[in-house]
Image 1 (cartoon, rainbow over the protein chains, first blue to last red):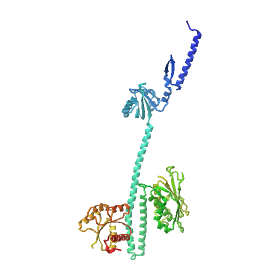
Image 2: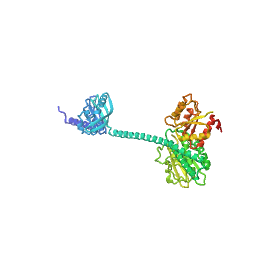
Image 3: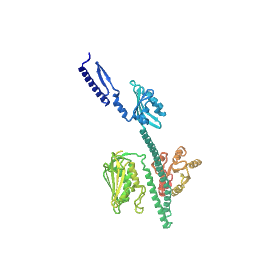
Length: 425
Length: 135
């Protein structure tokens, strides 16, 4: 019996439907929407995957920037993505079918063999060097055995060329920096021992000159002509000045930041001590010091004492004629961004701002930076005695405390010194 | 009472200045001079008597004042001789170290000979060596 045409047509319709379903499914698999499907046949479920069921992963592996290689257990390359081919600079089709060992640098062969053996029991990772023709490529590889499903090992290869290059550059910079640091430390210690020794040894002959001038002045004063006595006076005066210079320089060289013992210190008592040290000068000049309550900060008290002393002496030295020096000291927490931005190392640091202002002769604002430089003076010795070291010491002390000092002034309108000192260490 | 002191100093100017001051303060006092610490030991061991007092510079070549003091302390013959430091140093560390080694006084060399005379008067007075110059 032949089937009726109607039956056949029905069968065709049903087959067409199934075909459409299947095509839909394949499309879905291709698009990566599903990667497997199950069919129930005779009440027995069966799972189907198409070869293209790996599509999504395949796309991922192909498009990923890392090299991916599949090798058999004897090292034959059975699969590679284009990234790996690009990495070693050999066309894709010429990579497949070669042995992985062909692309491993002599130096890394043993290491790779170890990593490979290790991976057969699971996973392994490490850095090796690839070589292909003239290309030498440092890479990081991650090996995963695909057993028991497949008798292959999957390798993800990450190019380390740029990282290595950066590492090398950083290492080189670091080495240079270390060398510079050593050089700097040597220079610093040479310089400070030079200043110290020079100052010490320079004082000796000077003391002799002064001693013998003193002996002449007191012993044989009456017998000498007036002009000779005047010469000796001048020698004595010059050598005294020289001695002041040397002892100031010695003082400056001692103000290095090594071995500083910071302690929480009440600046009010430091100011009292400083005033006490120069009491005679204060009385003689009839200077008045007015000050706000000063803060307690971590500092080296001896150095801050020297800082305050030098600033007060500076104000007295450059007082306006016919007026008693008035020195006003104020203190308040510094506001954020108040300090020159190029000077601030950390914005999170808090500073106290301590201001010394006086009613002295002031100075041209254009010299505001220069007055802190060693041996820089704005006046001749005939006008004002000075070594040009006092304010340089101030700056060094403030720097030792990781602070900042600025001067401001106008001729005839007094000088202002603003000191910023960190409120915490 | 026969009085004699020993000055150990490598600087001839300082020797001269010291002798000038001593001459003024204690004209009868006899002062011997050694140019360095080794010479001083040679001198000390060559004589039967011990000096009444030693004035000692610190910064000297070959053997410095501290080393001299250390060796001197080890010899019972000299360990009781008063030693006065006569040095350019004014550092508190040197002073402490010298005192620790048994030095009695510390005179810092200055440009003012009057100060040296004052120091010498004070020392002789205090130690009772020069009864004649008590002020």
